[in-house]
Image: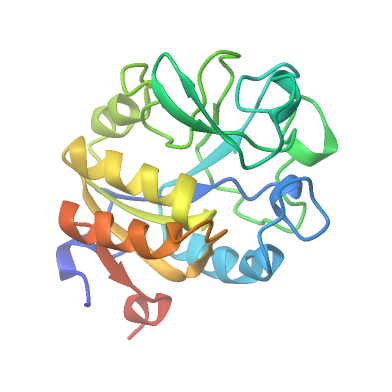
Length: 216
């Protein structure tokens, strides 16, 4: 679906949200997404089209609750129950100050106005760039965008079925027109998570497009 002309990338009311393009999510990283590095040139081309760009960055303390290493006898990809609900346990990743937490050096969007760090609270995971996994703690992104007169977002990055999807769903919940650019994302696809993510996003009113729709 081609977005309405009033919401093309150079519209000042539009922002590109670039999610978690960090080394730990790249091939060879602690929580690698297959071919994640192949997105870098695509996202760079998209970034050049947008006036407004926000970069999201996972930024976990070493003892983060989402790490399997923080729970005796547990392994990565186990599920546990925390006060805020079910939590998938992950390998240690995107630890604050580590190489794995750094944004990919090839990412070239010099006009990005904000780098938003999420997952900083040791006791709460944070997939979404808008609301942490307790579904109560807000990152401030919705307010930032609204204060700047932005009412529409395009979402790209890693991983499609987790941080990208949660960000898109929360963008819709906050009232933003929301598109996910499918060919500018890669997924983990854990136990059917990719198919479920697309279904959830469609039900919420998130529009799925490819990058070609922005240049056609």
